[in-house]
Amino acid sequence: MDIEMLRYISAKTGLGLNYTSKDEKVSYLLTQLWDIFGEKMILKGGTALNRVYLSKIGVSRFSEDIDLDYFGDEALNDKIENVKKKMEDIRDFEVEGPRILHRTLRFDCYYVNELGNRDRVMVEIYLSMPPYLTCLNSLVKSPFVDTYPTIFSVYSLEDILARKMVAFYNRTEGKDIYDIFHTLCCDFNRESLEKTVAMNLKFYRIEGNFYQGLIRRLNEAEKNAKYIGNSTNHFIPGRLRPNWRELMITLKEELVNLFES
Image (tube, rainbow, N blue to C red; front, top):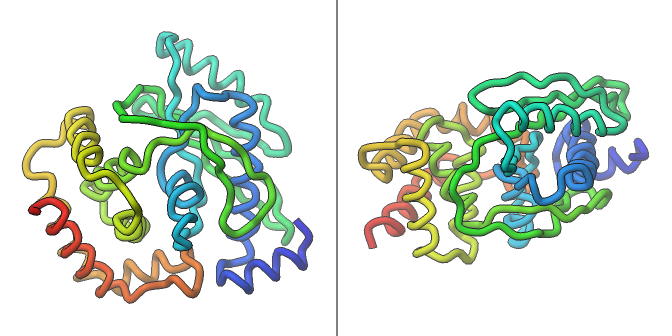
């Protein structure tokens, strides 16, 4: 990207220069991953949610990593070797890894950006095959930088929302709070959401009252709203940065309405 264009987009969005540059690198990697793996890889997580769904209602944030599920019929060791071999085809990045942790392969894709800074995009590939309702080939493009749009297999909105809730159940991150809040503003099928939530709770072996657990997480987060906001705002365009305490209170109300009505 031209340095002047980088500065223009950064000033327009309120995202930092390094993040704006990385956003384009994420796009470039996604185009290559689709060409290399095709429909064997399904895009998930914040990158899928913000580039495919939240972009439609104008509330996308920056997501810096690429999270994928690999679907193949091979034995586990063969999956690892096949993915390692194919990742060697990535161009214009210095790819290190993989690190292997709990059936996940992590690759660090290094590059030098327009400012001369060395940075990386982390690609995590999960080798188990988690349950899901549907996925479809969708247009995946950055809401901030127009270059390198691509097609990719992406989970349904309901599947991604269910997994976001599971992630938030297990950790307290502002990015999850932001994503869940805005996803609940999208047009989703409640029956489908309930079904995929149940599938994910079984797969990840989550017991107890899941919905009360989410409310407890939000209560904990509300006590640290300032810290969570300060650690998350740099991922969010300036015009979209919320009053975090108010957002958390509203999200609690939305979850109560969703699960108790």
